[in-house]
Image 1 (cartoon, rainbow, N blue to C red):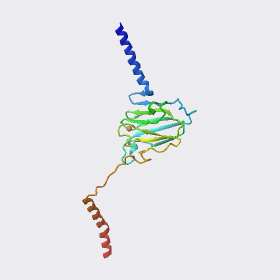
Image 2 (image 1 turned 135 degrees about the vertical axis):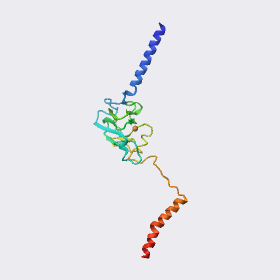
Image 3 (image 1 turned 120 degrees about the horizontal axis):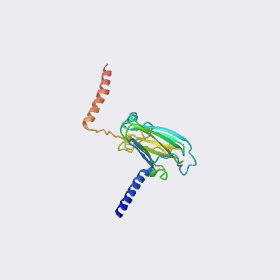
Image 4 (image 1 turned 120 degrees about the vertical axis):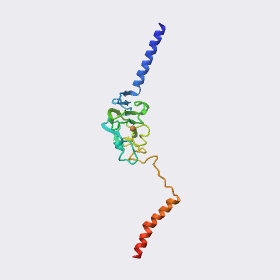
Length: 212
Ligand SMILES: [Cu+2]
């Protein structure tokens, strides 16, 4: 009898634990993707009301990186500007058949656990979620956190009230933190070739025209 009660209690506890895990971080999941920390109704402490409702559609995919040299993944836009206390309704569309995320960092922790808003699609598809931003003049990092996706271009910025500056390595906006460098090795052969080119390209035509 005691054993049964104990097992029953254990089962209850484990179920409660699982339920907690699922509600933790306000997470919604299905076989297509995941939404974490969506917030369409809780006002940040410093906001009296929602200032504006902004509908933003964000595409993610390899084709959006074509316009950036050396990049492989990108969002279709690299910057968004909103007012303080704006509510953003995001439609996130994955144009690829691989996983992509849309993560916004640096949000107030009392509304967004770990300061983070997170959308994820495991393949082509779309999902929608909202968030409400505080009034602070700030630039938020928006990126895909899968290995190498941000480094390969999937990085953008969200500015509230004009933002507090630009973030590094935003394709088309700011210079890369780790720029690609292709050093030239000045071997004797390279120097010889350069001199030969100078001779052929400069000196010989000069001699030819002078002799005419
Ligand atoms: Cu990605």
